[in-house]
Image (cartoon, rainbow, N blue to C red):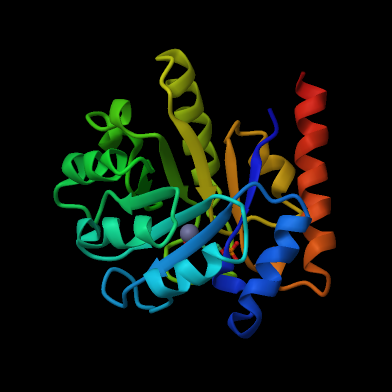
Length: 225
Ligand code: DX5
Ligand code: ZN
């Protein structure tokens, strides 16, 4: 199974958001990564449920809402009502993580937990059996266009081995600094979903860039089969 490409709309042109979301969908993206920031958990403010609902109307792809906000439990219902199929919350921000994961799943959405680059995999010990996916940050959260933090690739490989060994029903997503140049190396870690923002939306032909990256992932999966 090829890793799914998840374009992050943070790097899109917000004056043409619907149009550009349709371009990555046409290019074969598997899901739309929606970066939510509150100016407290990270030093940036982006979008909320209202814009998420507008994105929902622009695509049939699953919306993967990455909540970089304090006390994310307060907004789980609002993002699911806006059309999010996947909601990830930061281990570093969710004081009641188990309860928040249960609340997301109770609404029928997929629950994810996010680890910042310095948060160890061991922090997942008591929640891993309860989540649908883990999002590994390969940049420090807050902005697009940063360079990939390479030690996170080993973290991804270790998590892949752990999930496979324990036969957990948990997918792995990596987020930050992924480009056409490092995509093959990132995919070789065994992750299931790969976020990429500026490397897609920062190019002249968003659809063509998406198609090239999706094709690269498909060829890698065929070679592994
Ligand atoms: C950063 C976000 C990432 C970011 C990815 O806080 O969570 O999703 O937008 O953008 P690039 O691919 O440009 O690093
Ligand atoms: Zn993100």
